Each structure stands twice: as structure tokens, then as C-alpha cells.
Length: 178
Image 1 (cartoon, rainbow, N blue to C red):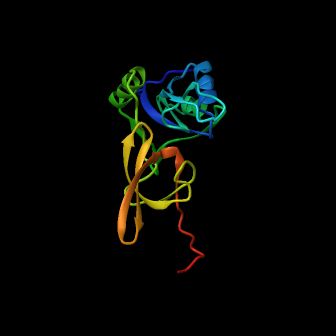
Image 2 (tube, helix red, strand yellow):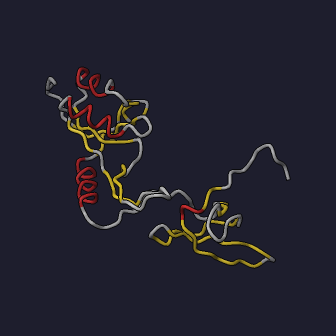
Image 3 (cartoon, rainbow, N blue to C red):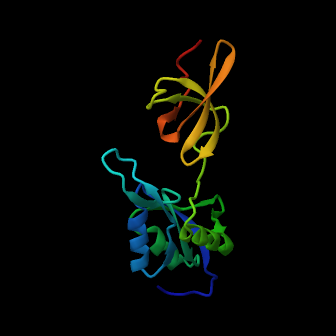
């Protein structure tokens, strides 16, 4: 790698699905500083109960680079890279403080809750477990993979606590009219 006088900043790098480790290895072979935050979760496969490491942000990792044309080209032509995340003006840098905070978080032993698949009021259906087939409205996350779902019946609401893995969003079908 050649080093220009341009400052080195952190950028988010979008990867092909499940190619985060491939991209990380490719960048490390090219001696480009990269960071793939991972968390430990329990495998969702029914036949296993082991803990596995998965990316904190599936499909993304972070790379520290100058926007030197040669170095930029080397980064984006790494196997599995889709693009640097940005806007119409180009890639948008991420503060070093944010990256350092992520590094501290993933090194700790506390559970990291990420994103939100559902928001309050989303229509959901329980697809497995004792309440399979029940439809309702998502209320809130309770932590440790548990959620609260309201079910309306006879003008009354009943709430149930279910596993987040047991519910799916109900997509409105534009072809069905009521």
C-alpha cells in the first residue's frame, strides 16, 4: 500500500451477504486496517445449543483508509465488497470515537441489544410456540429475546410474552382489498 498525505479515517464498508469475514481477511492481507465487530449469540439451529460469533452489523464492517485513489481502489476491489457507505458526495467517514466505543462494547461481557426488528404498533403473527397463529400488535421488547404482543378480542386487549424468534411481521398485501 502506498501512503499519501491524506488523513486516514474510518468508513463503513457494505459487503455481500455473509461475506464479512472474507472481506476482513482480504483487507488484512492487503494490510488495510479493518474492524469487524462481533457478538456471541446462541445458535438458532434446533440441533445445536452452542454459542457462535456473528457480526454486530450483518453485511457491514469498518475500514480505516485515506481516500487516496490507489488505496480506495484496493479496498473496493476486495472480494465480497459491495461499496463504501455514503451519499451523493461520496463515502461518509465515521468518527474514531464511535469506532473505539464499538470496540469497547464488543470486548465487554455484557449482552449487546441491537437494532429493532419491530416497532410499537407493528402488526405481527406468532408463527411458532404455544401461541402459533395468533395475530396482534407489537408492544415492546422485554430483553433477553422476549417481546410483548397485544391481542385484541371482543374490544378488549390481552398481552402475551413470546420469544422474538416466534413472531413475524404481517406484510400488507396491496392486492387484497377489504
